[in-house]
Length: 173
Image 1 (cartoon, rainbow, N blue to C red):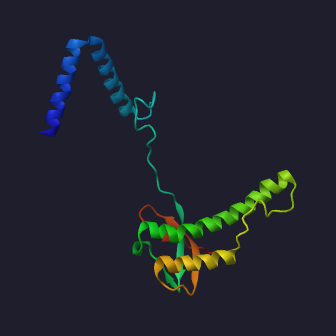
Image 2: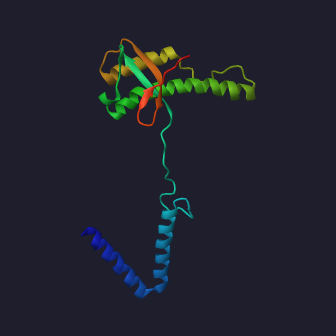
Image 3: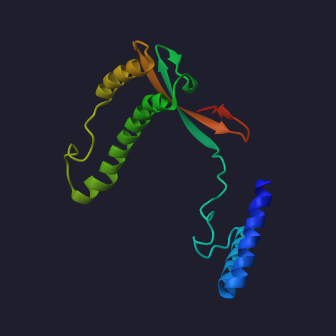
């Protein structure tokens, strides 16, 4: 009923437009035809005005993934036990800290020191030590999980996607 009503309203609009202005009727028909053609071809894009899905594409899964695993007092934390916000507050600080440490070293060694001929990296790299981060992170884990954090371990575990599910990557070296 809803679709029939919409279809009838649409065709009544086209009939009324045809009677009042043949020019605008033709513009609308050309626009509709062009939109249908572009959607059919999927790769032909004249302008974003005509093709709203032009930025859409199939995203295929990667073959390799690195999963951040957090172990508190020897027990692995599971995302299903936390809200998405809590899980982000658990995992992201660890990921960002270690990514930043790598970036600091890479950026300093490859670019800044080479181009500016400087010997003091303290102004250009983050001075947060791993010990200071771990002290802060232990308190953070206790606050979020409600578990007194006596010890924790952060592991970046490689996984392989075989087309159906993830499996831990077997490293033989």
